[in-house]
Image (cartoon, rainbow over all chains, first blue to last red; front, side, top):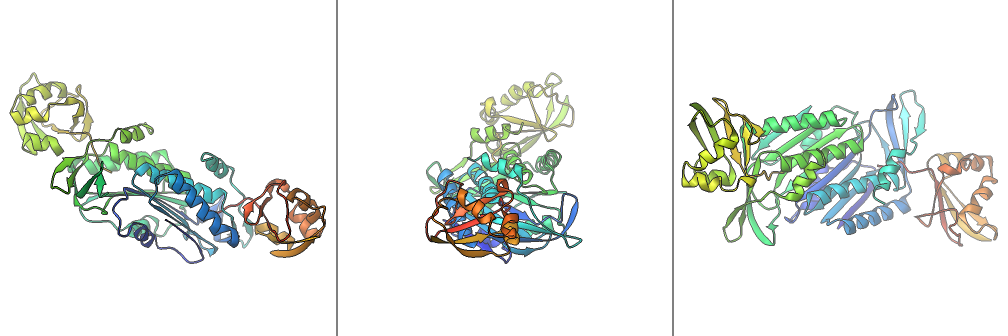
Length: 151
Length: 151
Length: 86
Length: 86
């Protein structure tokens, strides 16, 4: 019941909502999170963001976490799409969708899934700054803490 | 920075995402919730859902709560759309969008806004059952409790 | 005597039988708490609508009100059940 | 001696200078904890990549591993910095 994708191309939010809800009327609420590339970090302008991942591990790990969410909350389906490659400021990075009969389950599962993607899924971001300098993004302790709330 | 609508027509999720994000690259995360009409309640089949509201009060109250959310979290904009009139199972009822530089603020504001819409905005739902019976939906104590978490 | 506009929504509207009415209130009806029993005596429909005050909500001039909220001439006073939007 | 495949990601890959390598491990390298110092001695690039073990993460056969995780012939062993997706 989960759809997992790692892709370099953009995703279509409406199409993903439609795919998750098509032909069914048992959904009461859909939670969604979309992460996008910001044009600055720590006060410096960013011109690009490059995402690398560990292909053999990524989709299997994403499928497992989607399954864990479906066991933890009453979900009728979820969608996880993560982009890789070179992205520009304003571009979409990640989409999480969770459908449930109940609002709170949809929202909680959405928060759980994006926290997990931030802290456990094997993706790495490199930022390119205005002067051409490139730096790998350091892991955020606040993100690690957000994930541990779900432990 | 907030967009508030009460309308009988459906909304286009992608168009609302685009309207909120167009031309800007300072957003890091977008939280979204979509509420839809379920085809059953308490084990009975539903054939329609009719939403009534208090027009003079609704949009002003929605604008105030959007402003409250923007003061409470670092938001770059939010969108609240609530449908009224006669809806069918599977139809969209409500859309909440919240954009922030930060993931957690976007998710928390989304949860706050939909909890508020459920418990404080002057909308009333009437369900039409398979046998033609019509019943006004009773307020949900769990919803009231969810809202009080934000007090 | 002060004129006010009464609005009813959802099942309160259905029981009262009208969605709104303009009423002249006697001077002694100074608050929402005093208005409710006065309305209840107006008709069987009003009596049926205002039977369960625990499930009654009120807004004066589009703001949520309590039994203590005072009433002034020209007020728009709305009664409705607990809201069920979202 | 057991053959394993090593994978490196992000700045670990850049410092080691290759994204993957097939290595024959001596019998005494039985765990991830024993493998790291052995890798560090392979080249200046490896030494630079494995300098800060606090910021090192490892997966064996696509599952997160710890220093205690044992190594078997044919394993795919990946080293990378803390993840930053989402």
